Length: 203
Image (cartoon, rainbow, N blue to C red):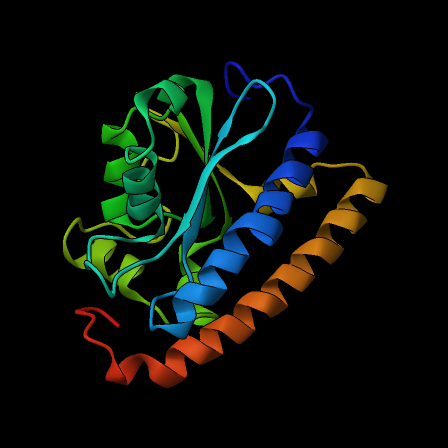
């Protein structure tokens, strides 16, 4: 899958869902309360899947602080001795990274990223169409037409990984994802209700 990851696919999926549920969502819940979007991210060690840092969108402070870019910012506020090399890490995004965050992941040296919700989900379920609009208007690319595996990194959609699991594991993972989806739907409703009052360029 990715060099350096020794966990089985099922172990990895379970751990990434754990991080979304226990580490990212609590941060996102607090961020949404003050008007930020629902996107979050985390960085884990490949060796043992331990969490290095988790973060969430912080556009109210700076429109550049998407979930991924803000998480990278927080990482570099840690002492250098506590920061593992990017090549030793897994990058997790709750939502498929936008063009800004794809570039940030690339420039930061990560050779992978995993995500749960797609660009289409961001548009259709979360009423945030900017990822697809920017791909089309700036880069002339349709949905999914960027190189999802390239010289720099390989990307993984968690739902596709779940589909390849055994029946028992797949059912358990899908039940967890359904709960996560409901949580994000609630957080999205809060954001959508309040976004008109927020000073965010692309709402």
